[in-house]
Amino acid sequence: MQDSFGREINYLRLSITDRCNLRCRYCMPDDGVPPTAHDDLLRYEELLRVAAAAVSLGIDRFKVTGGEPLVRHGCTNFIHTLKAMPGVRQVTLTTNGLLLPPLLDELCAAGLDGINISLDTLDNAQYQQLTRRAHTADEVLHTVHLCAALLPTKVNAVLLPETTDQLIPLAELAQILPVDVRFIERMPLGAAQTGQATTAATALDRLRVHWPQLKPVNERRGNGPARYFHAPGMQGHIGLIDAVSHGFCDRCNRLRLTSTGLLKPCLCYEQGVELKPLLRGGADDTMLRGAIRTAILQKPAAHCFAQQENITEHKSMNQIGG
Ligand code: SAM
Ligand code: SF4
Image (cartoon, rainbow, N blue to C red):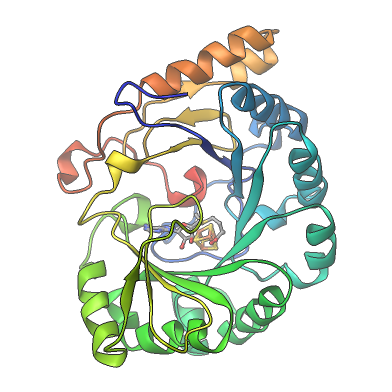
């Protein structure tokens, strides 16, 4: 269905947990986030009810996210059931990749349409510094190789001042593997409210020095707001998500559901429609559909990342789902 600005809303990000096995500095605060009580999380049946109601309003693409979605028991079964739901066209997953290898075959069999793997640096020491945990970038890179052989794979890297020297090595993954490597401007939410940010435009300038023949690609790839580029010899593409500096709000096609059931019209405002009281209070499908319609109609024209004082969202990204 269209929102009040004529945008077609066809994509829902479903956060299934706020827990994570990493503590990325731009995502979670130093002292962590108190995990949500199990009972406050939407159950898989509840998430599926929301998905079915969303489908009836024309939303046919879903991203399973978190926290780290693979830390929640039963994620693969959930994806299987979601993908098999009539009217669902696409189900993809965003993950840090660490728990992925033993689940990959099952996820492919479940009909998963694609995977986004977050990897901000190829340097093991820096990976540990950024994620505040002992895992290594090599582990994630190994998973990227496994995934690339099996299904459409994207690597997501948040642009950080301290990883400037990683731009070209990360982008080179699109040269040697059939993966899209996307650089995302760090959004000033939660743990990332302060500090210097790197713009997508700066990153593009650097990429163009390395690949002078890098050209924009007009075809639409995926559901996201990335602008894609390609240079001769690349197996994949390079994507830039200028979430903060440019704004792609006029093309925004999405809603977000937090793991506790808040349906968010826009990333940077805390407002949303609480679905849990409806789901647990006996609301029928018409009422649920009505609540989703309300959230769609509440979508603002644009985010306000450029005016930090107007940002009302104070949750961390792991609580929102990215
Ligand atoms: N744990 C999974 C992962 O890391 O892919 C899924 C959840 S994570 C919140 C989803 C995406 O949000 C990741 O690609 C992550 O890098 C991104 N993210 C987190 N904090 C961000 C921020 N402040 N600005 C931009 N992207 C951010
Ligand atoms: Fe966890 Fe993803 Fe946030 Fe990193 S970005 S702390 S992996 S939820």
